[in-house]
Image (cartoon, rainbow, N blue to C red; front, side, top):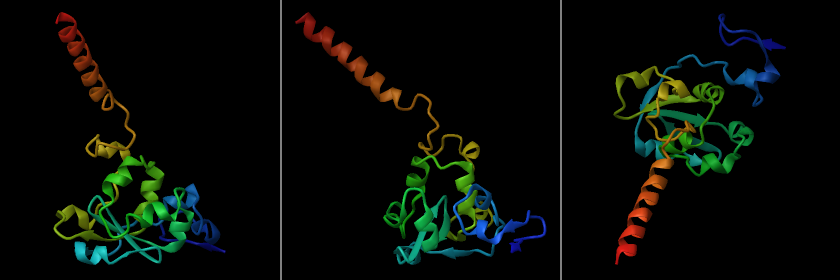
Length: 163
């Protein structure tokens, strides 16, 4: 059997849309009707059989089959259920295909979010531009504290040597 999610989409076998496969990840990323969701409502959805998270002001409802197929396992996500998980999401350095796949679970946007949240998707890595502080972008970030400690050690060495 074959099913299509929109006329502009490539036909995908039904079984492929039910697996954690790269082919299925990018499907069905159209913007669905969204609603504003309060932090109080988000907080109520913190169980494995009812798990919502907030990522970049977008509320995602994650079904059990998604949790079971998640490469990090269900516990990684359910521990963040009912909360803003943006920092944790970015610290993991999700790929762009995983970001595309996440988009199909968007059901709403965080109360007080800007107008763009009504239609935006999870940003691609290239769109983040280092704003989150995570995401595996590399760079000199981790070197700054190490350099600071090294400089302090050198200064301390010369101060104590002089005495």
